[in-house]
Length: 344
Ligand SMILES: [Zn+2]
Image 1 (cartoon, rainbow, N blue to C red):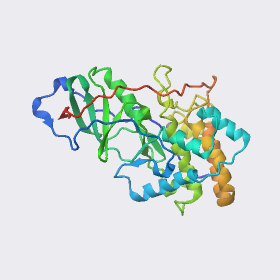
Image 2 (image 1 turned 90 degrees about the horizontal axis):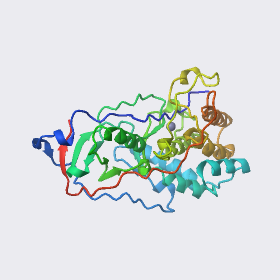
Image 3 (image 1 turned 120 degrees about the vertical axis):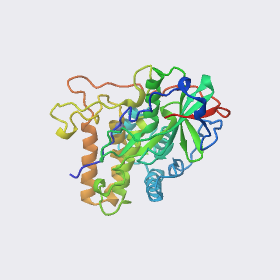
């Protein structure tokens, strides 16, 4: 089998520049933001609009990739939702849903992923909101410390920023939360449910496709949908129960995991994590492929399904069941009259 997409989630994937905080800043550093601060609402109305029309794409995501993702999501919009009783039960258990038709899965996804960012995060602008100082420290995301691998299919950036904020607050108690500029909005990252997904290098790389010659083949759409739902799970969880982001564990050397994955954060020690969710969504979608994919494409997709299942491992212990209740998050601040300064 050809190498399949990995969707490695690295919690603290980038570092905010250090050594400069609001209290240390010099008034000469005051600046104008590239986009005026506005009162950002984080209420994002969930509608029954087609999933294909529901995401916001950063303007630097290549149009061809946007078009392909819209086509992928449209697969779900037009899906008859046919599945076996056991496939249905698995989805209900994992997603906490009482019905798991196509529209249920769409809504579940919309609650968790709202924005798509491009693979290279270095150009995105971040703001550190210091509420008590009525100031926002600005910087570009800059060189990312992703430990990135070419086989990464995606990343949940909202969760990474949220976890980074918690870490930063240990040394900067006046840090309220972070904002990120996406197109003509400053988006407040109040919790992982902000729903920011980054496209990984492998998502559209021909070498990592099921069908290498037609990027739009249904088999490739299904592989990408598995990645999207995997990333959506990373928007779940809460601090109180220690489940924020449903973080992966380093794969144990237990004899069942391929050697190249041992020690890599590409396994789950919980039964309801991102690998389980991605696999459970992919499984019933394979019925669509029975009529519309080649035999070899079906074989590869089944191998991907089995690969995802195999990454759910407790090593010598028992699988955990994590609490998916979403994080309450930070309280939003009205930053419309805040001063901006440059973080170095
Ligand atoms: Zn993941």
